[in-house]
Length: 490
Image (cartoon, rainbow, N blue to C red):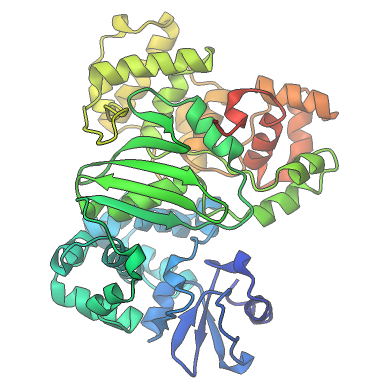
């Protein structure tokens, strides 16, 4: 979008927050870069130039605006609606792969050469993987500076910097303030607490956001010991690269309140990225809803409760296992099956607030499960053992970098995996926004009530007009039912 100068200028002059994260405005006279909704008086159009990423702005010598804080913008929705190389690379960078494994590790996960990855990122985003990871480290450093009482040396390494000098230089260059000056700007009423490893932050999103089905789905399917709904918040344990964490996510009118307790602060960036992905916070609800409103039978559902998101996951392999456990059984039965596995094979964790006890078992742990101990039909036992075996030996990998079409084909080739199971995994675990479930009983029932075609073939043909947002149409259709997944828990 940054190449459409006239459209960008109009967005800046109207302070349109819908475009935050889509592009960044660099001001040639002040050498700062802003989000489109920056509250200051817009600069003259001839003094504006536009970049596709904060990293590109920083590479061009611009510093972040102190008023609008462009580093806190929602992420671009582009990276969650595409499955090409650039989008998959951006999802991996957000998941901290460059900081942990370097650019060669990023390229290996994508199956391309380092040179090809760098070339494509530079062409589309104006910055290579190292610059994009550096911008992310700067955001993490600012967050730790402003929300924790940690010494700056600890923050530097927790944010992913290799040295304190690099940390200091980067913070000064990006924010035009030293780390200590950044901390001094925090109002005393918002001063960081003293609980080790505990962080409270705000996760921004593009409005509108309807939390009903989003949190309703997560709460209704919560696995005891791993997830719970408490005091208006969805809480769950997280398995992270350097340790584990516990997160509490609470819907607010203009943000998601996020409280994180981490065993290792180096996991902060990854934890935030996975929470945003879980709640689909980088979606563009206006674009989605406008497309779905073009169908006159779907439009009333959208108008009644706009801004529905697709509830996703923090662990793709975990979700695939839970999808198999939920085949042809009720939500309650699926939770019971999962809870037994968690108690027997999950790693225990300490929850300061009580209620959460385990991490969900890894594929390696589940691969050692005796099939005869599983209280399910023999055919589903076979499906379960095949899945966890393939995940454990690496012959099947499900992750943020997965190519949706390729992963779908691999899953369909497994015994016991029909289109419904594969599509649910593709939609909620892998994040394909165009996945559709024409054979789902709830979808067919909703279609019949609305006057849409109810046979899978005819409904699929009708849904072609909803592309590329059919996964969101699924949420609106599901919401016509009285199932608990569609309601925010009381």
